[in-house]
Image 1 (cartoon, rainbow, N blue to C red):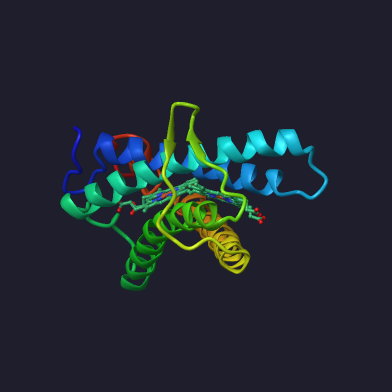
Image 2 (image 1 turned 90 degrees about the vertical axis):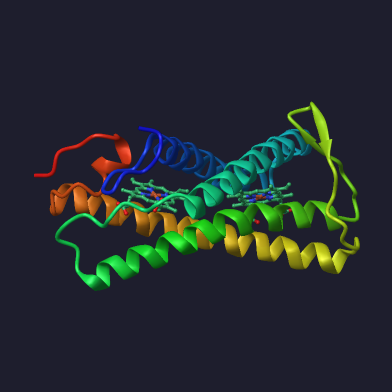
Length: 188
Ligand code: HEM
Ligand code: HEM
């Protein structure tokens, strides 16, 4: 089934969840590696372009994901979760959705205000226009810091979120992780 059911995630949610998770994990590593001070400048330029192309892809998929999340129904929580656990997981999911939009948008902003004015080539196919923001060294420093802080906060939240999923799977032996891996599952 493509859509979410009363207690299952549909294939669209599952596909978007794991594709975005992979992309974001890759972007976090790439972002960290490409900003090391001792990196070769030619390699750095290429890695920046890859980072921007993959980052725009993540942004597109995250917009689709948020619209899908807003439009569709949400499966009921797995049996056995306390009210506090349900509230905490809901809050973390909302925060994850917000950060997956905010991180690429702040990346786009920092590329747009840079005084170097380097175009963002989307996989060498088209140029993605800059956001209409004023270019200045101060604005660049501000957006760079905002992008880095939000990106590493997202990394921390993802680690917590994945840790919770593994805790449910290996310690509590419930269906929390399994139902994000396949559309049909049996409890217990
Ligand atoms: C979900 C998507 C994204 C993630 C997870 C991400 C993550 C990161 C991380 C971890 C860094 C290194 C920060 C540091 O250590 O200083 C970084 C740097 C950077 N990101 Fe992103 N990024 C994303 C999307 C984007 C997008 C869409 C763009 C531009 C269109 C972008 C442009 C940049 C640039 C130019 C830098 C280098 C900043 C500098 O000069 O230090 N990022 N990103
Ligand atoms: C960048 C990485 C990730 C992001 C942005 C992310 C985001 C989200 C969001 C927004 C939801 C809520 C889904 C919905 O209600 O439609 C969710 C659910 C879930 N995620 Fe992730 N996730 C990431 C990585 C991971 C990883 C690495 C794991 C496990 C190892 C994981 C396991 C799960 C599970 C099991 C659920 C279902 C929870 C439930 O039944 O309510 N996620 N994730």
